[in-house]
Image (cartoon, rainbow, N blue to C red; front, side):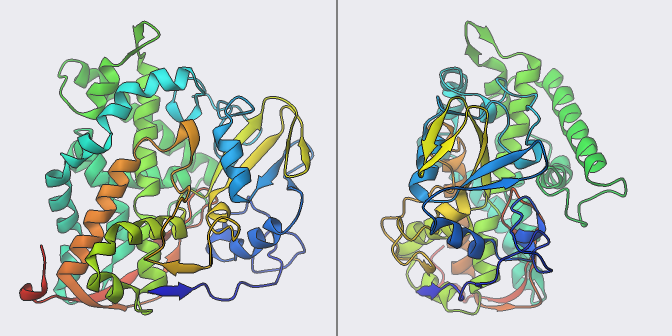
Length: 425
């Protein structure tokens, strides 16, 4: 099944996206929930030079929107550092976790730091976790068979916490709270997640609660080591020493945030945008396409919307001189719809091969949890499509207001249980 993207708007999206103005404000979270960022990016990709956005009189950034340029910037860690921060919300303010947390540490330190964790999250290791992942997924989607309206997005937002919470051996009673806190960290502009004190106060509280939680857990786990991911971090040695408490806590935060950001939103996109387009029926009829269809869902959603980098030296990208110290923002959602890299890029095609998307990034900072995410998503779609049929929208889906995560927070649907004789699992 191929579904063509609706004709992209030719209107220029304003800073307050659907209101007024002549230029697009790519920092504005409402562009991604109410506007059409893909229309903006498409026009940017057509230009022979990079575009630049000035945030204020001291801060600005270059936009990386093409696939080849994104690949170049993300691979070249010598010319483009991640250690000053990777999210636009930190533009102009150095990330305090730089050099401590994997996501904001460059090679060669990054390479040594991630070795044991990467092994624990490798494909073979995660394959052995399938028997743990499957019942968690089945439990989350089971209410879909009750006959009433089911908020698919709410279930998906809980899914990565179930899997990662188990792999980190976090108490089940804490999962819902931790899931909400990590969502706040990437969507504090969204009124549904924002406290009365505003964005800054909301973020401060969420970060404080998460870091305090992992500090307390760290003290307990040091005395009770197991084979969970937190124990791996505690026992990891690099540079001739063990990680200090600050490094362990920062990486616990990063692991949890990474899982909760990436995993939910590609299935949410499929359900929100293609529920009545024949995609799910075609997918169910061809289970052998589950792997390629999952990859296409990842390309289409590109759940991590951007990565921030800073140039360490003068460099040229797309006929544009970038000066040392300049910020550049790689827009993954744009790169994954680049017509030069993906034939018929504006079409959702579950048979797309090859599909070298960069939804998980590329280069040294390629998402360390990609195997967990991929296997979880394949199990999800397998169980969803063998257990249920006749998926129908049951209300208006709602986008998450965030410039860092491209996703949905509510997707109300209904479905019918598939007859057991039709099921393969």
